[in-house]
Image (cartoon, rainbow, N blue to C red):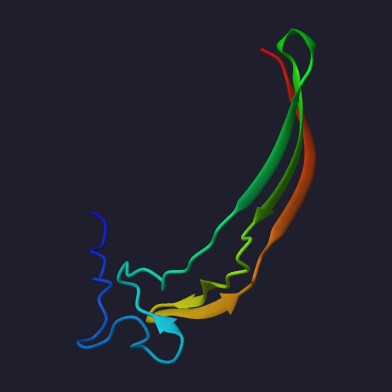
Amino acid sequence: MPRPRPPLVPPSGLGIGGLGDGQVALTGERLPPFFRADLRLEKRWKLIDGAWLAAVGEVINATLSREDMPTNCRARGCEIRNIGPVTLPSLGIEGGFL
């Protein structure tokens, strides 16, 4: 018979940030929201017999936003670390046919 698990609820009055500076309780609460936008530019050329060729430029996290990540989790909560901005630019060529 499995042992019952204790509830993951913080003491009264504690929530996000309630366990100390930069900590979150293990109650299923979400991390603070953040905004991120990705950008994609594409120029496509039609070739013969329905084939096409495209030049593509992409940027993941074009807004250069920082993101909160849980680190160093223990029984009473997780420390939150602000990382970034993690941005990934990409250039490429795509081709296809119908």
